[in-house]
Length: 301
Ligand code: PMP
Image 1: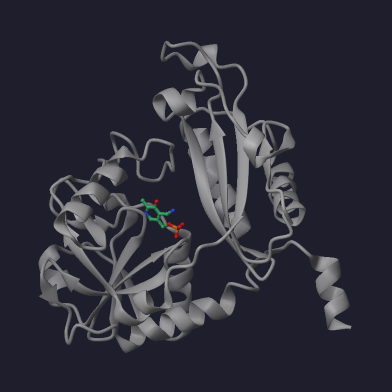
Image 2: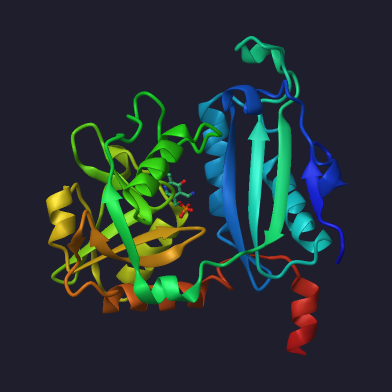
């Protein structure tokens, strides 16, 4: 496979030809929405959940996606097949499209759809064995009444600013608080803490994206008879937790072993976190949309 094909507008183009207008409001103003999705052994994990979130983000910003959810599913599956991918990361972008230099979206007549699928550069295995060091940052999470964290918009400056702060602090990831000091999430991942075998994650109304991995982990943990509570907590609760971990499409489930210089317990990934990662990796190849159903049937025969 020498060429990479990207869906752009209404057709597939070669990677070198996949360019958008400098007048696109996605570029000029971050005006658009996106999703990051994973494919595991040809299975697009939780594709319907990702599509639902994409269309809800678009609805929230009054952006008309020029395809139905069924058509978009087809386009995404075709992108995977055309690039002959088995394990991949998919980026779906819907921008307001080209307009003029003014803000007014009424000048953008053609929203633009982009689907990129690439073989994934996996996070190194050592990172899962070692765990992450994270630090709380000065920049607060967007208030939900200003720019809702539920809108997965192309405006990710809030997240980029906290990533810069984490880089400056020499740690792996940022811990974002809301304007009241409650823990919300990382720059692109949700946070969980475990205390006395109960698993806690912040309710999304405090200012966290309702992560699809987050919800999958809540379901898996409950299936395994753990108590899971969506409840507000502060940095102190994180510092004294038995285990801390992050979840996200890219990172899956990863242990946090240090927060603001405080080691979490013995400073090693915890056993419940490791179990949940194992369970998660078990379900990712089945729970979603199969890109190669006929080939897989043949394999089974
Ligand atoms: N929070 C933010 C801000 C994110 O960008 C992401 C990545 N989409 C997540 C959490 C994790 O969400 P998901 O599990 O759906 O990838």
